[in-house]
Every structure is written in structure tokens, then in C-alpha cells.
Length: 230
Image (cartoon, rainbow, N blue to C red; front, top):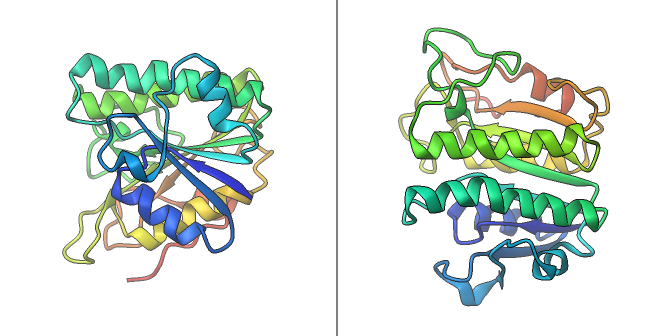
């Protein structure tokens, strides 16, 4: 399978690429001014032929919703909306069958922490730019999927914990993040498990930590995701 991963300068993107490379042909991309840009394909995801060329021949795009905090607020939100739109437009034009949007459970951040939140709950992001960026990027993805232009799976990831130390109630260990993406690459989700159409699905992804805040039953049923026991 030919896989394109955006935001290649991010740690999780590189980790995903390393884990997927054994079984897939993985291509990494990022902005032209991204750190380590010489190591991967450069594309600013504008509405032009360069973005079409970037996705041409790809089977699945893995797109990061995480924003670059070094940019201005307007620059970050531009990435979240316009660049995501351009990527989806190019992918739909090139007949790419699926895009996996790596979102964050922070879009549910204003719900009371004592509640066990599922995908059926409406997003409730804070006004932090990072949270709004995730939410707006997911909104763009959802509209493309609902127009049947491309199959989109949004994985709302928990708080990444790289060292397996003390974890929050929404913690996500890297191996579980990788597993979720691996499952989403090939999952048959035509029933629209957590969305309103067969082309749009949302899954909450976190590890099996004590007092887990977010339920992963939909991901377990729809993707075959099995969080590692702790």
C-alpha cells in the first residue's frame, strides 16, 4: 500500500513511518520551512498542481491535525482549514480512496472530566488555537466525506505518553496510536459506526489506563482496535 504521511517533522509522524515502512511504501511530506525538510517531500498544500502531484498514486493519506505552534494564530488556522481543504480536494481529484485524519481528544475538552465521553457526544473544544485547529480541520474533512468525495476516518487521539510514566486519564501510548492507524488503513467501515454517512467515521483512541475518560468501544468494534493492557 502506498501511504502519504503529512507533518513529517513531528515525532509521531516519523514513528508511524518507521513502523509502517516494513509492510508499506511510505512517503513523508511537510511544509517547505519545516525542520529537517531535506529528509522528505516538500509541499505547502496549496490549491495547485503540486498538491495533486503529491498525492498521485497514493492509496491512503494520513493527515495530521496538529498545528505548528511557531506560526501565527492566523497561520495555524490557515493550515487547519485551507491546507486541509486543498489536500482533500487534490485527493478527491486523484481518486484517493481514503484519508485518515489524526485529530485529538482535546476537541472534547469542555465536557466534564467525570463523564465517560463517546463519539456520539458533540465536540466541545476550548478556545485554544490548537483545539480549534483540530476541530475545524475535522469539520472540513467531514464535509468532504459527506459529499462522497473521499472516505475519511477521523482518529481522535489521546494525550501521547512516550515514556510510559505517570499517565493522564486520556493517555495514549505510541504503540496504540500506531495500531489504530494500522487498523484504519484497511478497516471496512461502510456502516458509518460513529458518523452519519458511510464515508465518514470518527473513533476515540486512547490506551487502557485506569479511570479512562474516553470510551473506545466504537474503535474496538469498527476498527478491531485493542488497547494494550496496563
